Length: 540
Figure 1: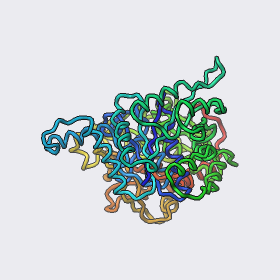
Figure 2 (figure 1 turned 45 degrees about the horizontal axis):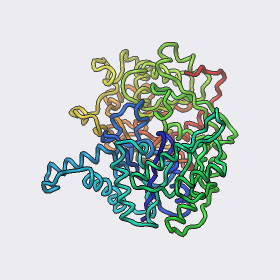
Figure 3 (figure 1 turned 90 degrees about the horizontal axis):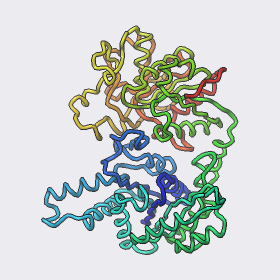
Figure 4 (figure 1 turned 90 degrees about the vertical axis):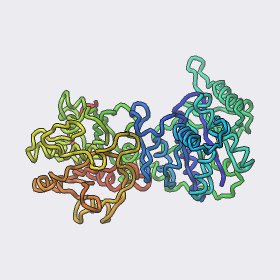
């Protein structure tokens, strides 16, 4: 096994996760089996209880682990199938260390950051390599060099690098090279200081990736090479991509990053075949067709809140040679001014997952608009529950129908708390999480799209369709086209009389990949392309 550690300096949000993912793509295309891993210094056990404003989306894995959104990049850019082993937080580390101390595992010794905390971190790397087969493991260290909470992780990988030895470990540092407009020049001092800080810890980077808005000229590269103590060919440029994040592997390949990595790790590999990847990127950048799809949510101003949904729409758009223009619509704006103002002219309406009652009436109005105007509708998790509530109120005539999440005293709880959730007290990691099997109804839209009678999808929810209302809704035309194997949980609902009205309780966006779009997204975009909207909507 070869080990690559990716660190970041100067500022956060530099794109370490994307750089690590793109490198994983290139190494896979060279014939290597890649494992990805993320270390996060925050003290939360996982991001499952964090507000999206704090952390963006929570990305769920097959085993139910609630993880950092960078793991979504890892799974989209590579073929690695991740588990809870691949995301480690300071909270998990300290919890494990303290549990061992309480159990007497340290035999009465004083428990310290070194060696106990650092050993726990190194143990996770060893555990992943023992339980997952691969040629290279890429580990991204969250945060920024100099952050106090990240020091134990940096010390741990310093020790680890010394233990596995030269030729088996590689340190890549991603740093900002800002452009100062007044001086009209790129400044290398922040990167110099960042590398100096990293070397104080005992880590000398082998490769420096410079995040920049402008091209690095030879003088800048030479200066960073000199102060960073790396050959000039090890100073790479990671310029902001204009069109799509999927250009990043191509840009890094132009910088010969994958060749240098293989050279430093003594890996003999062929040149990567980037034909299919280039073709995908070209379809994203220069599509033939165009659709406008509204995403109606309450965290709409946050790019990362619905990250996987946006990427899944991009994947399906490329498969149809179509640009998907995403129109972000604030659900609360619909509540104030009505659905017509914001949704007229859209060719598709998508309501994503979420929690809480803020904006729910706006989402219900959006679902009603889509149903009544024949606009393709796709509901995900809460988006399915919204569709059921709207149908119950306006088709079945159940006045006041809603979810017990929003109103515990509702006369018609068409969405209610799952039975096994009623005794749950702690919030973290207690929802219905991870991969679950769904049986599909032959002849349904879902069956047609999946080409299968049984599927497996990732879930993250506490509330479900109330089966007491199943018969009534089916009589009125709502088809429950996907259920749990025992038939007790509704997983997919649809309207056969509608051009495309499909809603699912699970999160299909987590299984979409660039050249393998998810069937439900693929069908949704196709239906949107066939829908002719005429008026321009007002953006939220």
